[in-house]
Image 1: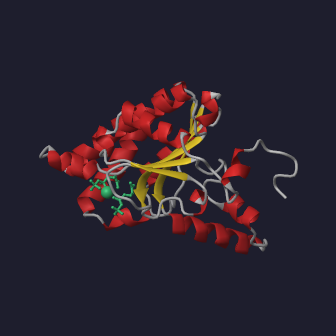
Image 2: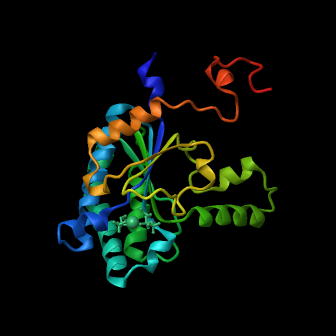
Length: 243
Ligand code: IPE
Ligand code: IPE
Ligand code: MG
């Protein structure tokens, strides 16, 4: 079997467990979020090395505004700092950045950073990195439907997909959630219709290369059937297989 055929082309990750990682070390929660940025930097490197083409990560959810004000402002400041510190190196590695999410409530510094990072990496094609920031799966469905309605377009699966915040990439093949919780927490809803899921007990700052490879190995052992029978899914595609 061709090993690379089993590498997911799009991996999406719910990076959860930063706060618990910090608490275990008697550190403030922000220390966990800072360490989480380091983990993300490494996961980008491992993804490129394994031939993954798209990495989508959940950095701040629509619901994370409900956290204490100092944690919210700390996360906004961390995003602004990460944008100015990390983008040149990511760009050098061939990473094209996108920031799916609702920008309307973000401060001008963060918004300008997102726009500049997307523009300055637009020529890269090694890895697409979607950093979902102030993103919610429900927000995405609603904003897509609203934009079709405004344009007077018919709502179909194709037109709605094209209006979603991740329309520039195919749906995730594999979704990983760290931190031990087995839920989606309003991450990609529409796009995970046929994704494979891997739930890791590892807290995000402690997520390492062996655990990443384990998730990829578990994925490689799954049979994706997309509604077909196991026998159909095993057969090589033929012209009549979609009928
Ligand atoms: C995930 O880690 C990062 C964000 C939600 C921003 P958490 O901060 O949720 O960490 P836990 O779940 O409290 O450990
Ligand atoms: C999901 O984690 C959001 C991000 C990782 C950015 P949460 O920690 O917010 O999810 P819940 O509240 O445990 O469901
Ligand atoms: Mg959490």
